[in-house]
Image (cartoon, rainbow, N blue to C red; front, side, top):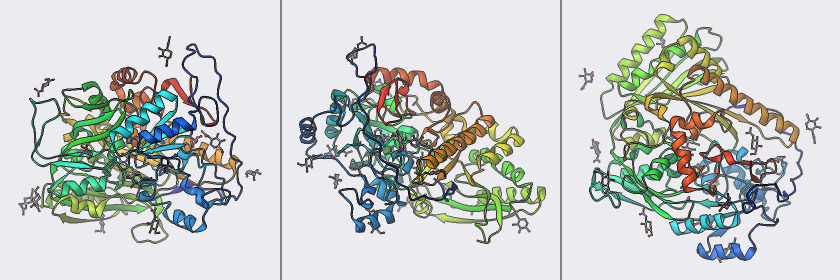
Length: 601
Ligand SMILES: Cc1cc2nc3c(=O)[nH]c(=O)nc-3n(C[C@H](O)[C@H](O)[C@H](O)COP(=O)(O)OP(=O)(O)OC[C@H]3O[C@@H](n4cnc5c(N)ncnc54)[C@H](O)[C@@H]3O)c2cc1C
Ligand SMILES: *[C@@H]1O[C@H](CO)[C@@H](O)[C@H](O)[C@H]1NC(C)=O
Ligand SMILES: *[C@@H]1O[C@H](CO)[C@@H](O)[C@H](O)[C@H]1NC(C)=O
Ligand SMILES: *[C@@H]1O[C@H](CO)[C@@H](O)[C@H](O)[C@H]1NC(C)=O
Ligand SMILES: *[C@@H]1O[C@H](CO)[C@@H](O)[C@H](O)[C@H]1NC(C)=O
Ligand SMILES: *[C@@H]1O[C@H](CO)[C@@H](O)[C@H](O)[C@H]1NC(C)=O
Ligand SMILES: *[C@@H]1O[C@H](CO)[C@@H](O)[C@H](O)[C@H]1NC(C)=O
Ligand SMILES: *[C@@H]1O[C@H](CO)[C@@H](O)[C@H](O)[C@H]1NC(C)=O
Ligand SMILES: *[C@@H]1O[C@H](CO)[C@@H](O)[C@H](O)[C@H]1NC(C)=O
Ligand SMILES: *[C@@H]1O[C@H](CO)[C@@H](O)[C@H](O)[C@H]1NC(C)=O
Ligand SMILES: *[C@@H]1O[C@H](CO)[C@@H](O)[C@H](O)[C@H]1NC(C)=O
Ligand SMILES: *[C@@H]1O[C@H](CO)[C@@H](O)[C@H](O)[C@H]1NC(C)=O
Ligand SMILES: CC(=O)N[C@H]1CO[C@H](CO)[C@@H](O)[C@@H]1O
């Protein structure tokens, strides 16, 4: 979600290969229940399914079982797939989101494969951070076969869609992965929709039933064919699976609700291997849990039906306010500007502002350093610029009247529909580097009651160079009426105005000692960011899809008072933890060891 990628923990890259670690031996831990293995199976050890069993699975999934080499292996002469031409292409594509989403195993942020095979011959390649087998699923039956196989044979199971995940849930060692990327077929319902076995219910308006692998740009384009839009995210390749199960914020959310609030029905494969339809009339607990409880926890989403909205015309604005980095009033100004966001949202304005803290002047490209804020705002449903202009001019006037040497500019542009806005303003962030995130949801008290505290928090939170202060929640999220009465998103969303995120990007070296120190520093810095925002808004929480994997008290931070019910549902539908990821509901009974194996704690 970042406009710039700032490598802030930079050390010289060293051309030293690390030896690949030996395969772990099976664990023989004392467990009270002798029939339940202490760890998931690992390849080439006792308990790993035989080649015949894998071949049988392959037959069940119509020959769609893959054993992919890590994509970076083409750059390593020691690897069977080595090819210098292919290496050049992979290197050229490594920062491209389409490359990673189109790979059966690659993910966007290197750290989640433990850097075990980057496309750099100077680094080691073992591929041990990647799953062993992948089912390239296109039907619920393929998914079902994979779930049943993993459950029956004690194999670690993961789900990969686009591989965007910021908390590393879509890659794992020694795993069978269900790759749902090609589950994209879709049906538009232009006038109304009746949830299955809900004959008393007809939901008016257009909706879209789409496979869970459908990506944002595809969903927007399809809805646009009937002059509608999904309530979608800003990235192009983010897929419905992780987005919808995690909540799904949108620049349209303040006016229309969260993406998951728009869900009318889901189809899943449960941990028990059943293909289930979830809606307000059947499987209501799972319907509630799958709308906010997180990916790869309660089952595999195979398709989802979302209410569409008539594509609104959009009045858009870009703005920036900046000042010299040495201006001691910079964060007074920034805190005040951000404190205006709840009022903006209540008036129908939403957007993607980003705070900059001591960066090279991106406005005139000079080498001076500045602090400031830059962003895109919209008002959907109008061709009248006056609301945006009046509000921004009021902000500019106050800023100039209150502090010295503040510069600014804004422009408005009219778009006849949301698709026209998105085509120019989607998130183009590059990928393919080490990246950790921190998130906090900010309500009106956090944003307005103590500007001194807000100033301090923003200054710390943006210390890596930038922080988002996205206005992606507001009135329609606050009074949303999800089907069935409620869903399981963190309740704090219902009073949030701003989603704040900070990212820590860093380098990969070939030196294990240095890398361990950099991993450690990155974790520490992420923890510092999270703590700064927790101090500002101790009673709120974080958006699990764009947060730190190492968030403290993650159950409450990501799910609040919904956690107890989510946990009860998880225990009921998945008593043996067929689905496991962290930080995910019910993951407390297992941990990944340093050698990558997954064992009971
Ligand atoms: C450039 C960029 C822009 C973004 N913009 C937004 C935004 O505007 N709004 C927003 O809310 N978020 C945004 N995100 C965050 C995004 O919502 C998360 O990264 C999300 O987890 C991606 O889901 P995915 O399925 O595409 O990715 P994956 O990494 O493939 O999956 C993410 C998680 O969901 C699980 N999962 C995926 N598919 C399924 C399925 N079918 N059934 C069960 N579990 C599944 C995976 O196992 C994993 O746990 C953005 C991320 C990036 C990188
Ligand atoms: C032991 O584990 C097995 C498989 O996970 C389960 O079916 C069984 O109920 C467990 N027994 C006890 C006593 O916990
Ligand atoms: C699965 O079967 C197909 C078709 O027979 C074959 O091409 C593929 O290599 C098999 N996959 C594995 C992992 O053996
Ligand atoms: C890799 O990048 C090239 C251009 O640099 C592009 O033509 C090609 O399609 C990309 N391949 C993949 C798999 O993304
Ligand atoms: C996965 O399946 C899709 C759809 O059938 C196919 O187009 C694609 O080539 C497959 N990918 C791999 C790596 O086998
Ligand atoms: C996808 O295609 C399959 C097979 O043709 C069909 O059974 C299913 O209903 C389709 N799903 C959607 C969402 O259209
Ligand atoms: C429709 O009927 C189902 C059971 O048949 C019930 O659970 C549900 O609440 C009803 N919905 C409405 C809107 O009346
Ligand atoms: C699309 O809908 C908007 C209103 O929601 C309307 O203004 C516009 O004319 C429509 N466009 C087309 C091509 O029908
Ligand atoms: C735009 O909105 C403003 C204030 O809401 C109003 O005064 C003005 O008349 C509107 N302009 C047009 C062209 O409708
Ligand atoms: C402040 O006033 C100056 C001079 O009129 C102008 O150039 C600048 O853009 C203004 N800044 C803001 C934030 O309004
Ligand atoms: C790794 O870096 C450390 C610290 O700079 C250095 O002492 C050590 O010799 C390096 N290790 C290797 C194998 O080069
Ligand atoms: C990650 O890689 C490091 C260095 O190769 C290794 O020591 C560590 O065990 C790996 N971690 C996991 C979880 O596989
Ligand atoms: C900084 C960070 O989170 N590093 C992690 C990268 O992934 C490996 C393997 O999961 C972890 O061991 C590191 O802690």
